[in-house]
Length: 115
Image (cartoon, rainbow, N blue to C red; front, side, top):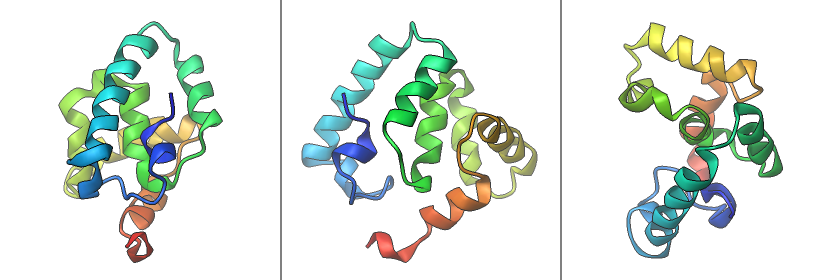
């Protein structure tokens, strides 16, 4: 199954497209599929899946969630710029497996060309 960024490549990860209509429907099905399928995968297998579907850097937080669901609510704290230690911890872990840096993620997430 295609990851979200491959299904609607023009949709920003924070777009309303993921909260209504076809995008929302796909996201629900995708996360059910991912939970059922990838729960038995190793980190290496999850990384292989991600490498098969190159993503814009703005989607890094989703890739992190896919790789390490055990981060749970801590993952949402990466949007809080005051959570410096947590953001550094999560993005250094992400960098070790080849995901974009915190700076690259923020730049793409805030890029006005997303429309």
